Length: 141
Image 1 (cartoon, rainbow, N blue to C red):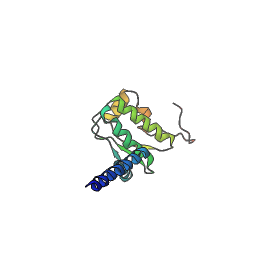
Image 2: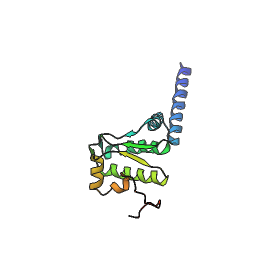
Image 3: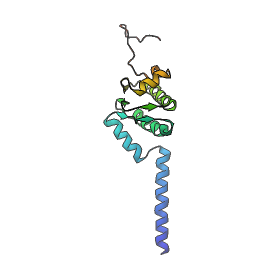
Image 4: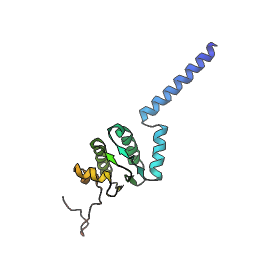
């Protein structure tokens, strides 16, 4: 009986150790699944994006930045977005640009664009492609 208890304790300790190692590395099966989804197609945003979902949004966006796939954000279904979520999206867009990566936004004239324009953050999200002059240089804003 005592050996069964010791074996169970050893398995529990090993499981905790593996979970802690994955946590320290910043990896999990959930993130692996998200990485696969990011590679397969666009990152689809939820209907309502608010402060309560910012943590999961950051995780999903981070996976997109780490993958080598094109970054496509589908925001067509978004009906409401708060300023905290917009700030996360701006930080994400800036990180992508600092890595010389383009973000393709699929949002049309929907709620994401409207909220970004009302809060004066649309230009920081790079919702529209930056026009390039005939000489190959981007205009100074």
